[in-house]
Length: 178
Image (tube, rainbow, N blue to C red; front, side):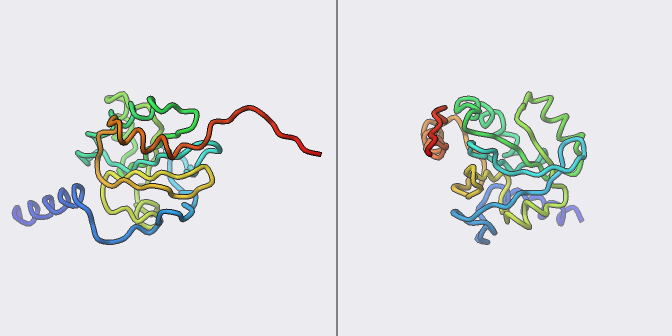
C-alpha cells in the first residue's frame, strides 16, 4: 500500500513539473468563454476579462509546491506592470475555501482568487495539464499566451514579453463624428 501511495505521489509531482502531450482544450487565438466559478466566500462568480485589461489567469492550488513558489514573484510582476492594463486573478482547484483564504492571508497575496473545486472549468473548458498554468486573455476574450509550469515572474524577458501583450493605454480622447 505504501509503495502504491509513493508511486501515485511521484506521478502527481512529475505531472506538476512536466509537460503533458495532451493538447489544451482552448488554443491560442480562440475565445475563452466566461468561467463559472466560486469566490472565496462560496458565492457564484464569473471570470471574464475586464474591458481595457489583459486578464492574467493563474491556475493554482495550495498543495502544489511550484504554485506556492511562484506566487510572490507573480504578485510583484503584476504590481510592476500596473493594474491599469493588467488584471491578475488566481483560480484555485482546492476543495476548501478556508485553506485558500488562510494561505493567501499568511503569504500576503493580495490579488483576487476564486475556486473551481470540481475542475469543471480548469480541465473541462481550459484543459489544464500542468499546475500552475497561466492564461493571458485579451479584453475581448481571445487567448494570446499560455505558460505551463512555474516561472520567476520578475525576469526582464518575461516582463517584456507580457508587456507587449498589454492593450494600448486609454488616451482619454473621445472621437465624435457626425
